Image (cartoon, rainbow, N blue to C red):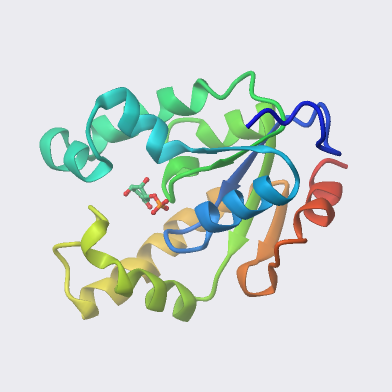
Amino acid sequence: MDASKSSPFIGLRAVFLIGFMGSGKTHWGKIWAAVNQLSFVDLDEVIENKAGKSVAAIFDTMGEDHFRELEAAALRTCIDLKNTIVACGGGTPCFYDNMQWMNDHGTTIYITCTFEEIYQRILAEKEKRPLLKKINRAELIFFIEQKLKEREPFYKQAKSMVQSSLLTENSFPGIIAVSTT
Ligand code: S3P
């Protein structure tokens, strides 16, 4: 989508949505981009297109470390993006210096969720997620608790934080006003 003509956000640097799996980064990113005449990029899709295989296949055949390298490289292709919302993967801010890089090159928004919200959402699509497909419900609870604890220090470096349950299709201008000041 060419956002340069009609968007009220002319000159806006890339807006990176971060947060745990299931927090709604892709969901809200697509909606806010459409409502505000911005472009939308899903970082997992950038990785998949470049690698010619799905995220799940990359994890299976090459392992997580290799995925994280591809992810860091894909993120850096966003360097010149303007008027674009980028939905990151749940782990993106937590590897290499990705979080610092995003804060240096754009705006970062952390979509926060309660444990219960995350659990319910990712339980429903567990099979699709490489980090989760082999674990049972009890292990899933442990996984979410551990990973949230480990990842929150990175997520909390975001320029603004928004609670997932309060978001609407009209939330974006208010969030951006806070995160770019
Ligand atoms: C991951 C989250 C996924 C994807 C990969 C790893 C993670 O993205 O990047 O499976 O480490 O949390 P979503 O958060 O969009 O599901």
